[in-house]
Structure formats: C-alpha cells, structure tokens
Image (cartoon, rainbow, N blue to C red; front, side, top):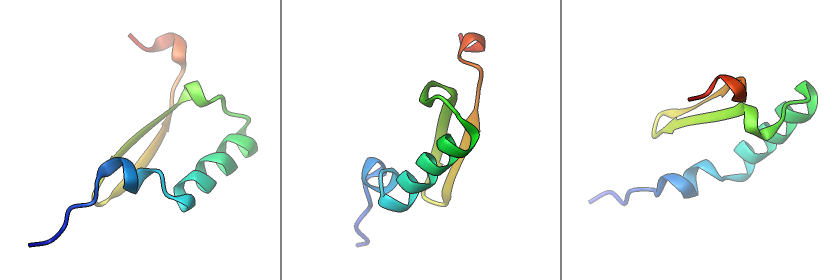
Length: 54
C-alpha cells in the first residue's frame, strides 16, 4: 500500500517556499493577496484583491 503524503508537508517544502518568497519580492505582493490551491498533481498560485473576498 502506497503511503500518502500529508498535504501540508507537501505544500510547505523548500522549493515552494522559495518560489513564493521570490514571487512576493519580485512583484511586491502582500501575503494576504496570495491563494494557493494544491493537490497531488501540483499547485496553482492566484493573486487576489483582499477587498474583493467575501
């Protein structure tokens, strides 16, 4: 039986953390503007306006 990777362990790996920091610095993005959608196939990062969220 294949061992499942916990999603939080998978998301918070060094490569993703580096990508997020690089993106935030390069684009001057506030962390409140980022939404991360992840599954076992990969992840997507969306930039949103926090004032438009419900």
